[in-house]
Length: 561
Image 1: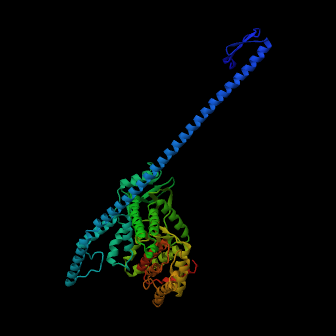
Image 2: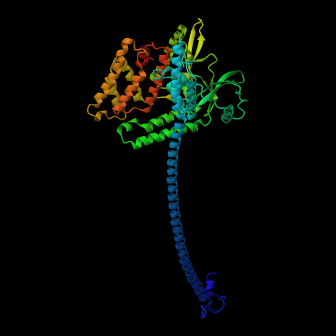
Image 3: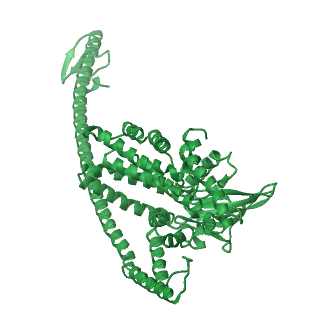
């Protein structure tokens, strides 16, 4: 076929061959051989021409691919540049939102508390005038809960409302202050104690909606019965608790159903964002070593982790199981058992502690002879359980205000009354790092053996960061400072070293202040433990100020418990 383009072959018997328009004569065989040769040459020529054209096409395709690759790279560069611009714009928008939020939140706090500028002085003046008038008339009333004026009631009602309105962080602050009768007036603590279980409850419609989201629309047919008429056992800073019924194929039993308040996660994140922004601003803009030593961003991060765990009830379930395992051999201490398959992020179903259980604050109000006897019996169990959490288990309940501690009275076979302390709301628990745990144990041992200098030296050696060694005489001054603090408390052994005579919380606070002055870094979790121990100590002191602290703590310090 290719040859026909150049040669027209005659039949073999013809004596002529036409080549490129010219006639050529020869024998049939020769004519055939020449035609075959010429056909081969023509085919080769056509192949070379086709190859050249193919090479040119390949070169064109290669140039096109290179051009496409260049365009793609350029397009990718443009896209990356555009993405970077969008990220930068997003960062600026986030900064503006943070700044606007800080300003708005600050204004909100100031506006909420501003009426107290008028209400508080008015209440103080009216209360003073009222008490003076009663003294003139010879009337006395030692009941602090009822010895208050109308103006005082209005001021305190607004204060409690403001704390609840501003969110769980402010409620937690009020709950902590209510336990510190050694720092604040008794009347002040009594008022704030209403925050322990009397915060504003949310609507039942939210509870029902949350139950459906957690367990499905058929949760009642699966056994959990909760009606609007059921009792609200308490409403705290993060959640409220109902008494409900859990049915199974064989029986039914009362349970407690804990449901988070609406938008509690958003409110917590709002306050945490404000705290983090302020901490970062202070740490960045104040170039002082003492400020750096505070580790404010890390402290806020630690607190944020604690608060976020409180608004996830699955964490509380895990904590309850850990506490139950730690105290399984202690019949005088009880933690509710979470119900398997009835726990979600926003709902926790657990054992109901019983209608006979009473808050420990009930015993604090009874100053009769029998009431004091009951309080002494409770104090030993309470303080020992706290020491066990700190020194034996290294797993501390960090939300132990009186509203979270209940007491059940049980009769033994000999008709003797036994008291079982029940701890609730275990969503916040703290664990110390090994070095901080050793420091805390050494401080308590130093109180017993009056050897604060050694305890201070060990704290420096174990610190992750310290500047004592670089300051002339700094190490000796820090250790001597710890010794002075310890000696002050050790000297009170003549008074029996009871809870009424000493304050372990104050001791730990002074040691932490020394760490601040001499730049000895301590993990923020240590501060959480100190605050927890101050609350525990204040509650223990209210129960029995004559409890011998050293005698109670010694088995835990030497590792016998």
